[in-house]
Length: 407
Ligand SMILES: C[S@@+](CC[C@H](N)C(=O)[O-])C[C@H]1O[C@@H](n2cnc3c(N)ncnc32)[C@H](O)[C@@H]1O
Image: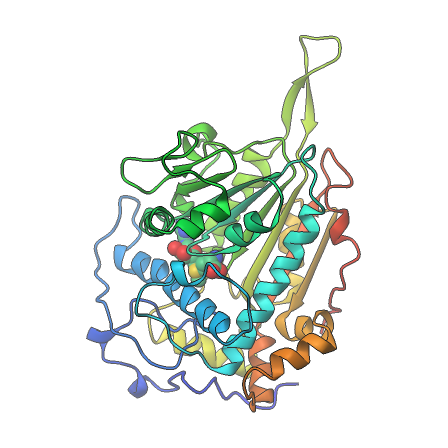
């Protein structure tokens, strides 16, 4: 039961506490464990100019800028010892490092390690004969690819990252100028196995692809080889949306997931044994992990939503997928029907983190605001679902994970 609607303490609660319109922030204070921060950054105006498809460019910039907040939060958690991530610094904008509040650091820790666990269970142990594929939507400056590739003997994974061109170009610049990122990927930038587009916003190598793509532009008519070169339609594949689809409208978010479930990884045709004819219905095993805010309708959630609205920000799918059950239904509706589960961050801290690890994390810095932590953590969830498709064992690693009963 929620005992107070008190928002985390650096959320302004009235419009008079908001920064003046001319100093609205490039990266808004979205109620995100990743983005809540101590100070208010410098602003950037939001114009009304639209891109080619009617989306205001100013709003897009705000959404693109949320990645800076994500990288700063990651860096804060790394510097304090919550996470071990030697690649975070290279992907954090220079001079932007800031120490986040303890509840935010703990949130970054729980969400990152929980998604890491789901990814590790999907990938299983190294096996060059059974390649798997990961497609990260709105990957931004995420470091998971570097952490994964540096710890597996050889890439038995094909990893794709998608984001707006402005963000993919930033990441590619960081990779080009940082030998440790190249080494983690096993890339030789002067070799011919890596190609970078002329605009510097797309990168292709045998195991790693960065695609500059506005997800709102994909449709069933999109040519796969042009839109997502290097995607293998037949491999067991994991889609990850770590705080990305929440920025799309419900229709757009549904279209993006359907693009992958029905079009990219939809039923394929293969020659029958007799030759000639084709046999429909073979689908690659496919899973989806979502990390998103939930529960906008209780007092705490309402305060967060109204703070955002005052900044012109609407997390449009938040009301549609407001509960753990709504997230599970969403996965079922996308025919990820072999299994689905959803847990909030509070549950993960309680049930997935060992007592020893809890003690280690608790010793890193003082966290007095236990009630505030629990409230915040109950407003973010991780949901996952999968379909077995052509390989009933591809998601075996997910079958025994402890999930949360409805509350
Ligand atoms: C909060 S950041 C999260 C970044 C990363 N997933 C992480 O968790 O560290 C949201 C990311 O989604 C990306 N994004 C949002 N809408 C998008 C769209 N329509 N097309 C491509 N990327 C999008 C943003 O540019 C941004 O990099």
